[in-house]
Length: 102
Image (cartoon, rainbow, N blue to C red; front, top):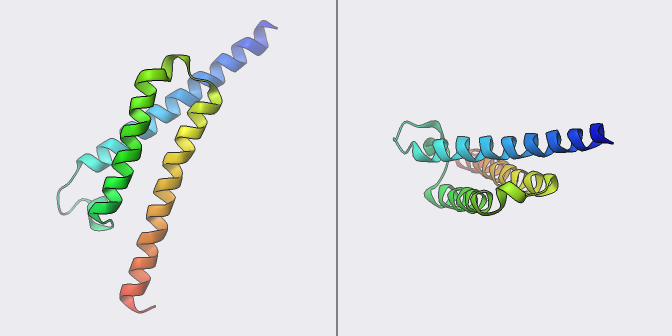
């Protein structure tokens, strides 16, 4: 029984660490606003703002509820951030194709 509890605790901690890592990587990415930053080059201010809002929301939740969060909550928060990034990537590709006439 203890082994199952330990495994559950380990998965929870791993999910939390992955969420924290993603939040901080995204925050660092958004903080680099120099004109030659790759993320700035391939995104619009409105896209960066939407991603920043999702990052802030996730960080706020983590600060308020992170110590007592469940594994599934950490995963859901991380998946939501990943979704926003995939959406951004898809929009960027579409914009590049449209502007290049492809």
